[in-house]
Image 1 (cartoon, rainbow, N blue to C red):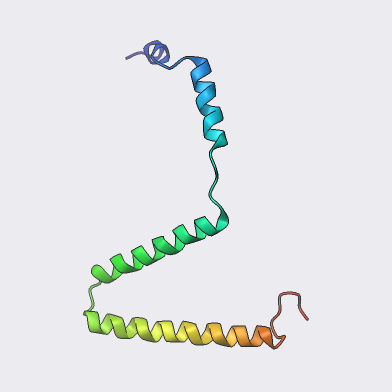
Image 2 (image 1 turned 90 degrees about the vertical axis):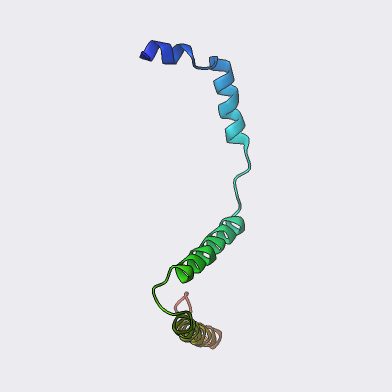
Length: 92
């Protein structure tokens, strides 16, 4: 097929312009929606990693539990330091 044949098979210019305007009018996802998609993707990815992990399930659950506790403790420590006025983003 030649380039001219491809061009001849394109829809009329007005239809292409209308379609481009339609695409431009579509609603863009909000930040919260994008964040939900990201979290859902991370959870799905974590689930897939657990399914295909080379370790035994009990070892993996123990390691994940320890890691979650570690992150939870550090998040609580940071939240406590911020609420006490330390490490505030404004530098005060």
